[in-house]
Length: 495
Image: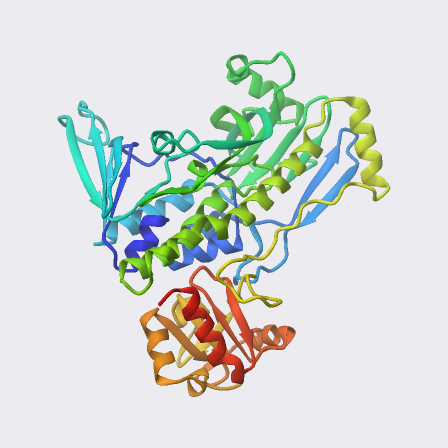
């Protein structure tokens, strides 16, 4: 995602990846509307959405089958898509990989292992080696090869065991969550009917997660009990025995991946060192109970990419990049704590403790879950700022579609009252052009097809709204206030 977002902005990117080919197996199973909107920027949604399932209800049941909690995931997200999807990850990665292969600004170096990252004052040197290999189904034999890549900046998205983080000496703090779960990802051979289709059995005898992964696959997860080891639980016979308890056999499914995961919550103390930035699991890991691990990594790079763009183009000072962690970390911590608290509900193994939990839910006395806050940092101090901005259907001329496809993406200034440009000085319009802004009168030559923009702005008592390239609202107000809003944006961007 980082390579794609920077490449589409016209920056030369080298992506060094240790796997010679696509992994082609699932890890993440969930994305939300915000992430789908990011994929839309790279024209990578069609294949993915054709197989993904828009979620309806996520249910948590106890061992007796009683409902403890239900999460309505069928709402319409503000980004122009249903709020949540369950998906089979390769259907997302395949079009993304094709997009990178077609981008002249992106160079893919697959099969190279990073051996050293050497930060400098003006650039970073990345050393990598590709081992020799014999001919196989993927290509001819090749000799060992070493490369050195010079980059003005490096994004290390190299996973929870990040070699780059270790080399830079960046410590992580531990939020104290650690559990082992057996994961079995399966391909459906025929339709299956389950008592619980999407959610968790909060059964102290064996906490279990049941999820669809798009239209053709399903995921099952079981918590390891005391005394069980990852080695014994990796035996396919164990997975089939547990699947059998759900009424499933090899006539219903085939197992495509079986693995024992250690769910943890660890956050890097700092997400950057000089010109090197950590993203995704390299910067933070969380339990999967809210499906936000990969989503958080994509949020990282949508935040970082537009800031790197302004710095690389000389529009903003490099100090702008110091806002990356300070903006992302509060959101990340909120999702992590919510995931931990959800896991605590699911993972109870003591029967007496589970009974107390059930009673708390049935009586309405269950503890409140953490709330995800709006973004803070480079936004105005006002209600509505820092929340996600709207994307809805618009029409310009003969073209009807979602706003980002019809109008374009980046910074936007949108009013349903009048042309915002009429309220700005030549200097302010030049500033907006320099940061690649769409100034739009929705209601003029751009039609608000479903009336959603007018309703959304009215709900905030705004005549105009300014949004950032990562879809967050910078601020809104009356058209008379717009010059002040734009000047404040310029101050934040250190132009």
